[in-house]
Length: 180
Image (cartoon, rainbow, N blue to C red; front, side, top):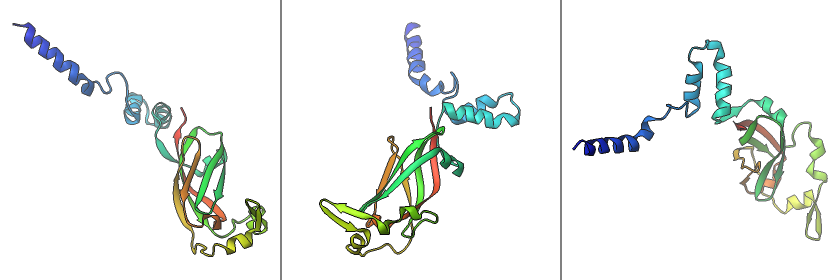
């Protein structure tokens, strides 16, 4: 009976072919794409090939500080959290996370956002910022550094006691994924 061994051979090939076909019909990830794209190319083409492959297979990577010129963002310190929102992103990358430092000191050159003159409204009650702050005496003693994941809707936040005491945020690192 030749049919039975032929049938088992077909079943074996059919079920295990998914393992063997990776790369048969073109690259299946960034690394394979670069290797495939560089075949027969001069080494000087590696950046161009990598950029082409990144468009095809986006991955998260650390972006240069120049990328900050492509985004407009806002951060909001609250009593129990700090929120971060990207208002506009004109660049080629979707921001996936940031690492930022927060301090209770005013940012240099940012005196227009001075909270000392602000009024806090809670329901019908209006308090000066100094009076509001006096109700929460636990002021953080040092800077903190946090990594904030950014969601699909371009927002992120983290929980922190007395977040409203922080007055300055400085982005230390920014990560993104190529926008398809």
